[in-house]
Amino acid sequence: SEPKIRIRDLSVQTKINQTNGALQLGAVVKSHFGNPKKINVHFALYSPDGKELDVQKKDMSFENFSQDTVWFSTLVREVDMWSADAPLFYTAVLSVEYEGFRTQFISTKIGFREVTFTDKELAINGKVISLGNVVEIPFRAEYALGEAESTQKIEALLKDLKSRGVKVVMP
Image (tube, rainbow, N blue to C red; front, side, top):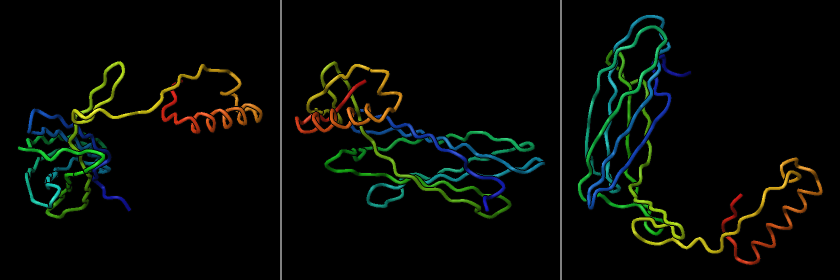
C-alpha cells in the first residue's frame, strides 16, 4: 500500500551556463491524513560516477488531506553534459521522513543538455543533429476516422517514406 504521506509527482528543470548546470527539482507531496502533519523531505544528488554532490532537507506542514510542492535547487560545477553519444546521467534521490522514519524513496535520472532550434536545424550541446528528410503531410479527414481503407493508405505511405529515408513526419 502507498504511504499516508507520499511524493505524488516530480518536476525537473535543468539549465546550462557555460560549464555549470543549474537544477531545480519540485516534488508534489500529498497527505492522506485527516489531521495536520509535519514531515521532512530529503534530497540528494549524485554525479554519473556516484559521487554525492548535494544533500538538502526541507520541512513541510500539511492540513487535512492536502498537498504542496517543495522545491530543491542546486548548482553543479563543471557539469557532465548528456548526449546521445555519451548519455551521462546524474541521480536525484528523494525521501519522505515522517515521525522519524523514512517512508518513501524515489530516484530519478537527470541529464544536463542544451537544446536549440533554428528554422532548419536542431542542435544538442551545440552539435547539429541530422533529422534526415522532413516531410509535411496534409491532414485528411479519412485518416482521422480510422477507416480500414485509410489505415491501409497510411501504412503504404509510411512504408514509402521510410524507404526514401524520411525520419520525421509533420502534420
